[in-house]
Length: 553
Image 1 (spheres, one colour):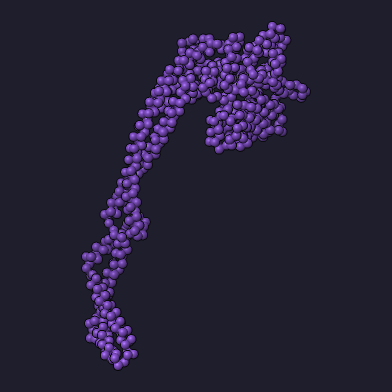
Image 2 (cartoon, rainbow, N blue to C red):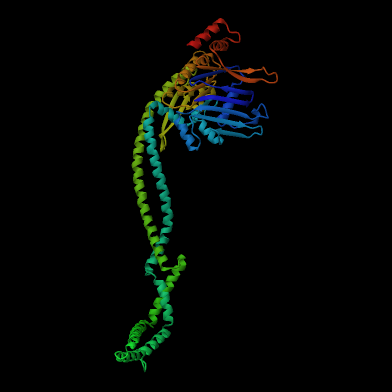
């Protein structure tokens, strides 16, 4: 709800404060007094682009500020959270235009772009001006109207939740399918690499061991000669070293009784003897392991070359890294198989949700088909009351090819304004004033069921008078029982219905320029203003009596 509108230095408005009531507010005044200028200032709050030509005092900036009570507007609070803006019970929206032409917008003192401003303020103010037919072109609005009358709130919420589930599953399937296609392009090559490593079947550290063995085989003869010479010296020479040590050891044992001091020497010599004998045995073992088989050497060389080829191919440096690569390839290929299973599972789940979705969509559609003729008849009846007796309103519902967030229906508001026998979309068939009255009739039907922002009607009663104007006033008053309404009017029947009556006038007290002022009319002033709307500047007694009857009706 709009609590206060402050306009400073805009066109012929020097400074103005308007504090509307929470129900029906009517705004009257002579043509050219500045009513449209006030709407122009309000449009800045709604995100319209600014122009420096609106500045009266070029050395000062223009400031337009609106204060809204939003404590019960949950949708608006969620929108603020989505934009990461401060959430307060009162929302203050401000536009500033500098003399240099720079425009800035603020929500709760935080700078925002015009797109953000427009998106958020559309949830706070619904401005209906002549030739403004955006709402009547809005598919979502038309759907909301039908669902409000059909009392589809719960069913639509359930459907929307199913639709979100369906869309999420469809997005997951699309993402995994794209991933699968990418992996499929790579899987053949990965399978080839895996087969190559599997066929090679390297043992742990085999390539490194082969490199060492090949070095040994390359010097096999020299190694064998050295080993043999060492063993012969120890065991098979003319005077084998091992035998000599054994003999010396036996001699030392022979003098142990007469020379006890020789015992430690004999024991040390026995230890050396045992060690050399063991060394001789190991030398013999090493000799037996030296293989001079050229065929074996060729096989080992081939394994070594294959290993280093794979090292280079995969940019690794060890057999262990090749094993790790092999395991990774196996994991990737298995993941591809798992991905197929995931896609199949998601598709089954999606199909299950889609069946539920279609069932809910059809139930919604049936309720809408039932409500549509009821709404059509009521709107047609209301249009006759508000000065469109020849109009026929109809809601056309067709089934879409695919479900959307609001169901499987396409809804279009159709109108035959003059019994032509041809129904066309409302926004193409109605004039500016007619569209405002059509919106008034539609919103009066949905007032209880739909949350609506502050509704502003600019001359909704253009082109009508008498009973039609009275009916417009009644509709506005009834609508204002549920929503804040501000109506700019030239009709006394409408002006009299307001809880608060604002009078816009030009003030020429300043000899240098004329400014627009607004004041709230007191009861006696209001009767006089309405009488003047009926009978001119000098209203008759009859006009005054008629005005009193309108105000008290």
